Length: 530
Image 1 (spheres, helix red, strand yellow):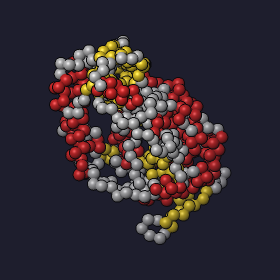
Image 2 (cartoon, helix red, strand yellow; image 1 turned 135 degrees about the vertical axis):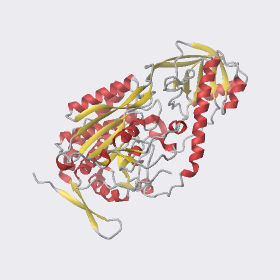
Image 3 (tube, one colour; image 1 turned 90 degrees about the vertical axis):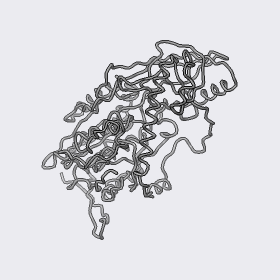
Image 4 (cartoon, helix red, strand yellow; image 1 turned 30 degrees about the vertical axis):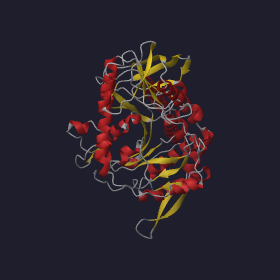
């Protein structure tokens, strides 16, 4: 069958010649039909969120997610389906229930949930509430000998600020135009020393406080959620690493319940709380984490070259990890299913990766890139090794692995569940006319924008750091940054199914065209770390 293509013209950089980017409209049409009229994205999404639930890295639920996604890839006929282990991440952890009750001067249930990797209470405990503020190591001494048998209220009350903008937001012409503006970055090296110092101080203080509270025999600790309006926003505490101090049971409480407790103590009232947290570490020793990988093999002379799609499958523990990031996982899985369903025969191999450890610092994708593609030399200094990769001092030239030259491009989804409105070019100017061509068949469903600017904080950065093309799509944010990001409200009901269908169609189209291009995707110059 003859393929119908369009040739999209774009001015070449550095001259007036016109480059032509082919777009296979027959394939795009088949992809759209499958994505919009025979979608399975919500079935995948629903199983991840409402059958499996929250997927904290190395938890039993994460292991279940790895196994289930492998089974789906095998069912769809993908190849090389496997879990890819990365270095000892730490121990698994899970919780099954948590409650806090005020017993005096009045009786009231208080809304709070535990921080990951903190211990449980081993049944209900009751104690007097005391206010504790430790901002530096020296502050510890003023509480020594006073906290045994107490429940600790950590930090200050926060003034409630009423919202002035809608909770949910979709891009319009004005906001998309704003994304076209590029801000010249400040010199990052100048503040490296400050950021390293602050990181080390935070880590040292956390270890000291964990040890101190446990030695004192305090019963539990409560801190304030970082968001208002009854939202519990909570991440990790304690330590996931075996042998490090995990402290005492610690919870985050909604601001509207935390603030009255501060006011009661400030007024000299005696407050007693009952706390009951059922939480446990599921391993005695540190364990490796696992990414889940699958492929549609390429054919012919380009089969060894690689196009990748990905999203992180791990989540925090209090919701069901819906927008962050079952949405991205379901979309990228659906993109692979679509390509199989429409009979795509890519010239390059299309690989999908469902990452773990993203929430703890892109650990799964960073390790994968280092083992398969490229990495800067590991530091030999113990103090440097203890730092996140983004804060380490330069250690030498980039070390490229065999597959570095075989790699073409990576596309990521991790900005909530909103529909794609375009893509961030990550300052790769040569990629922009290519993306503009690939997006043109999706202008009618709102995807129109190619922005020069960088975006960060998710797994495409692991590729971009070593000079490989890695990109994140522009998405409608919906209520991602107002209600659901890292909160107990990150659940199925905050998702728009039609948005996921649209995103899957675009992801499949981008992967297919990247796999069929005559050349690999253009690369930016590799800048030596400073």
